[in-house]
Figure 1 (cartoon, rainbow, N blue to C red):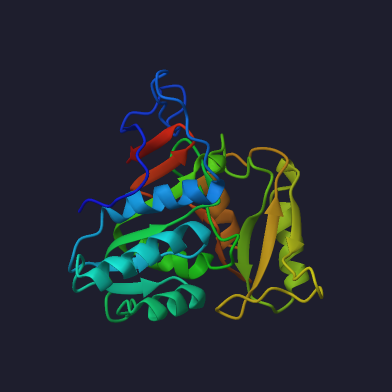
Figure 2: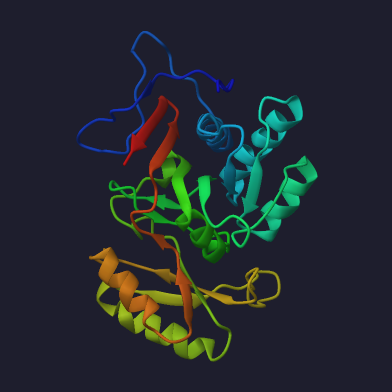
Length: 268
């Protein structure tokens, strides 16, 4: 299905030295300066080209995924998409989808999802992700893990050499009970990487951020590469009190990166 969006020179083969680098435009064509939100919209619209009538769709959460959900709702309204069932990854996305008239269900009724579209906070060269800075990592991982295809949409600012490389948070969802104890154990676990573990709170009143599942989030900040991601994942999940972490390892089947000079598509 053809989706209208600003035209860029795209490529399925990003440069060899960086598997996830936006494609470049010819020198004869002057670059178009776009805002970060415009880049997000371009990536989202490209991802919706993967959507077909009759699909069960995982509907992502966040500023980038919001553009994709908006477009899916518009295409349903226009009759260009039919018989779509959406499974939202958060209460926020549920409300958005309802307002757009997108029919909704859940994993209990549809345990296999045809396609999920969502953003990411970080993408490494091997298509591993950090997600969950918006607080929806558990439901995102459940739904996207049940998907035949998982298309990730980002702007080029989200590309990193290794997970945690942005210096921003890698979230871990935990139960509220004795959260300080769990936070301390998480920090000790990655002491070798200079880890600092902070409870996520609201800046205006200092109250803990509470997820849709009534849990807390510990944000981990790393000064160095944490190393083997699978080993790190296993160590985190072995800690009692941990519900899930924000590393999405080997889950993405396609990553769409929008940059000022073009759109790159990376497939597993």
